[in-house]
Image (tube, rainbow, N blue to C red; front, side):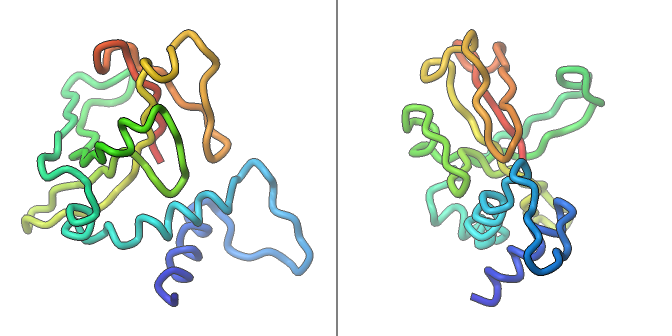
Length: 155
């Protein structure tokens, strides 16, 4: 429980919420509760073996873009470990169940969890529809990924 509280406090600090006066109301668009839920749910996955045991892929795919991606600077997005159950759930999005975990391969051979990604295949939500949202952010549609495109949100 202490670890979960520490993770929640870290998650709040990441988005700039360090303290609030008694009775203060946090802005609704911060979606703080969902971010804390995500941080607590993924805390065990800072250990890559725990992620593998929980069902994420054993064959990560490194997303490397030497020429940049959608106007971003060249570089790598990291190694994507995917959860087949979450990717094939009909487009269901749950804050505590990201479809992908993004890891950095470290020089010492270990892995560092850097981000998560939520994915909705276009087969479940066509790219012509309004973008879905999570954490007060809109998903972005990537038509060139997969057979018909995907909606994605990196956190």
